[in-house]
Amino acid sequence: MYKHCSHCSRGIAIGMALVALTGFGSARAASNVTVDDAGDGVVNDGLCTLREAIGAANNQSSSAGCLFSGSGSPTTISFAIGSGLHTINVGSRLPPITVPVVVDGLTQPGSSCAAWPPTLAIQISNPTNGQYNGLSLDPGSGGSTIRGLIINGFNSNQGVNYNYNAAISIYMSSGNRIECNFIGTDATGTMAMSNLRGVDINSASNNVIGSDGTSKPYFARNLISGNRYGQVDTRGYAPSGNRISGNYIGTNAAGTAAMDGQSAATGIDINGNPSPATGNFIGWDGSGDPALMRNIISGFANSNNASIIMTVGAQGNFVAGNYIGTDVTGNTALGNGTGVRLGSNNDVYHNIIGNTGSQDEASARNVIAGNTYFGIDTNAANGTHDNAVIGNYIGLGADGTTVLGNGICGVCMDYAQANTLVARNWIVTNSVAIRFFGSGSFGGGATAAFINNADGADTGLPALDSRDNCVLGGTGVQVYAQGANVPNPNRFEYNWWGAATGPNTSGASSADGSIDASPFLAAPATVCSDTIFRNGFELQ
Image 1 (cartoon, one colour):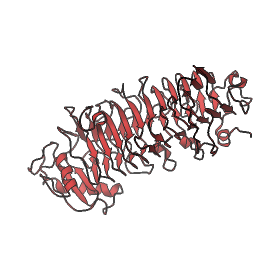
Image 2: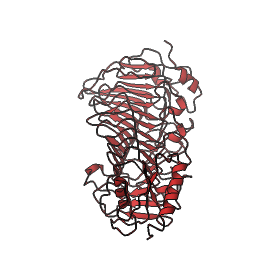
Image 3: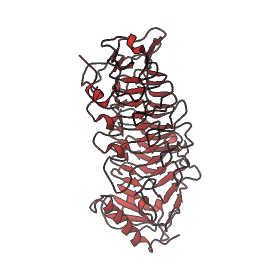
Image 4: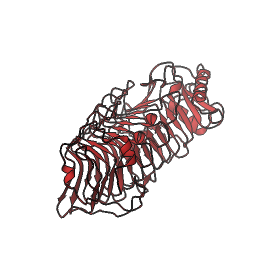
């Protein structure tokens, strides 16, 4: 171990240098406390543990061997524990953070996020599977940053948050940044060392998990993989405006293989209860660099798993510019059980998978491919309604050429009136391109208008509104009932289902003959060009 006094000046210098480098001006981060001991005790011995440093930051004063220097907010918690990789084994719950801080693992000598995969040298672990979170950003901590750490082993489903124990808990704290961490893996980013959950966003808004779309001198991307339940969740009162962008979720650090240990896990779960989750972004936000904001979300292969789930209270959220089911190239399948799942609750609506109708088509496009069961599944058994799937590659790789079909169907609307707009997608070699499954035994069928569809219309959608899609191979559209009837009306207009001679006719209330036209187009199909998609096929 290293004495605090022999390293405090070096730790402060390193911390201030990084603060200047990364844009946290001196007026914002003028105070500092340096961790120089990998232990977990609270002892006035001249050494500073992480536990003691959090206490000193919360109290804004020196204590228990930690020298608190300067003044101002946020407080940087720096690391100077010798050099190279050091593990802090946490034996009980760490103090929740209640002031703005920058917990900066990149201050540890030998640590760097300048290249990807990064070299991270501070590991926070829970070797006894204690019933608590790793780091907790609690009320008062808004505007904090957690950067450059490996956090693993917080895997208990009991204790302070029960089934929501997480590596990083953000509770009623907004405007935080989680950057360049390995969450749920070892230091190499190749082996799972599970937490129960990766990042838990509870009743908190405007947090950035990963990249905000601006260029930095380091990678803001997180590796969030191998965690037992969810990798990133929102929940609680009105979680809104959060950005989950630019991360590798479910893969190894290279983005080339699925992580193990995810048999019961999901990728990202957006929900809000009792107040809705609104305006959250998964991937591109429409303004930042789309390459920096692209998530790779793959490796959740169990039949009940999905890379993205939007359930109770998910309203008006956006999924754009991601690779869902593929590796980092977008052209090799890694797979999920399902790519994106919506529902089933009557307060799941106005979510957009892809383009809002006014964005750059290529930047907003999700690649949803190589998934075992469904590309996109909307379950309206309990009233999910008025969502949109616009401008995606479904079953097609990022290059627009490689065929990576989803197993059962590209886009599935299941049970009652899903009121789903499916427009301007390329849908390739799935067993069924678009499936509408009705059942008289389920309720639902809300009639609220979908305001922000591709045409800018403010009228309610039919149960299925399918237009301007390019279907390459597969069996086209499948519409059938189970029980009483299929909810009507359905609309299939100007979709390019078959031969290169043109789309199906306008005004069809159900699948007309041209939907079964043969032969189907093969990828790539120049007839379905981006120019055509931007202009739309519609003639009326």
